[in-house]
Image 1 (cartoon, rainbow, N blue to C red):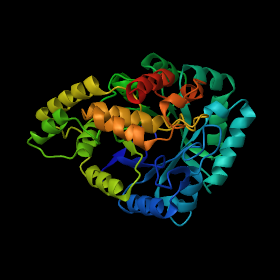
Image 2 (image 1 turned 180 degrees about the vertical axis):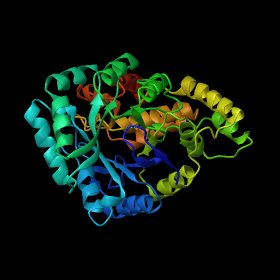
Image 3 (image 1 turned 30 degrees about the vertical axis):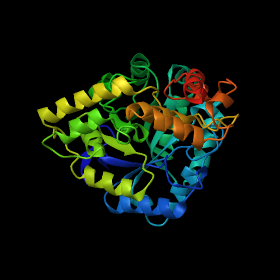
Image 4 (image 1 turned 180 degrees about the horizontal axis):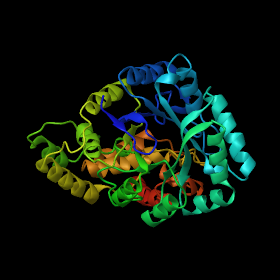
Amino acid sequence: MQYRRLRNTNEEVSVLGFGAMRLPTINEDATKIDEERASEMIKFAIDNGVNYVDTAWPYHGSGMGEAGMSELFVGKFLRDGYRDKVLLATKLPTWLVDSRAKMDEILNEQLARLQTNYIDFYLVHALNKRSWTKIKDLGVLDFLEKAKADGKIRHIGFSFHDDFPTFKTIVDDYAWEFCQIQYNYLDIKYQAGYDGLKYSFEKGIDVIIMEPLRGGSLINNLADEIKELYANSKEKKTPAEWALGWLWNQKEVGLVLSGMSTLDQVKENVEIANNGIVNSFSEEENQIMEKVQEVFKSKLKINCTTCRYCMPCPSGVNIPEIFTIYNNGYLSDNIKQAKFMYKSGFTSEEKASACIACGKCESHCPQGIDIINKLSIIRREFESE
């Protein structure tokens, strides 16, 4: 396992972090974590050098308004001798905060759920222009300073989903120790993007990367053109090696969070992390990645990472799975198969035509997707005879 010393927090972190967002579940119920399989995964990761574990209030929950099961699972697992081996991260759910007192209430509950006296990396979750203005006016900076002075949190940061100008404003508003941004070889100019990565680095703020594989879309159901580009390279690598290695090749990247859902994924990513070295890509490899980016940009229809923040839908529409099938159909140039999977894989209540355009999903989507419109397009393409 490769490690990097974060400049601002002065913590030595594994280049790979364990994201407890997409843990295996029982019977496809996102709220019921398969604790036996999940424990095997996180144990393997930590035993093989991963020392950063990330969770959040809503992960593995029934919606953004309720606490999910991820924090509870992580706390339960870490109590058996693993807490001192890792840097633990969780987040303040900004959308639930309506007062200064609410922040303390949530943090105290998180400490109890995680069965710990302190959180190493505490993030203000999913900031955008609107939520930052709201949370700042409610006194979040005072809350963070006091929580740190009281020893409840050690390092102060934020996660982000908006454009670069907003990111720059938030960075400049406070002496943050670290930040977390969505970044991968497809999102170079999306949200904070490379400009945000570089700006943070130059300001001395440590950068943690989320969605390095875009929910698996950068490694699964790849177009033939991408497969050919990889196959013709002198260096033979798996799609995950290309995607993760591209990130670790950059000096500005502190660590990369991966939301793994199987033990095989953990084993593969841990193995790849053994070679997570800055400036390890050759000029040929960089050129291949540029070509891969162009192919993806030409084929990707919906900018969805399957984070499931849009769920549950009040009408029962299975939004992330519908978008996955739709995207995969275009990425793999097999629309016929995608239509078959759509028609046979969903009940009438789960299909796009069940959408009542209430807008609840769009209010929580970190990608800013016009979900209602996209579902309407899919309904026309996939449900018409």
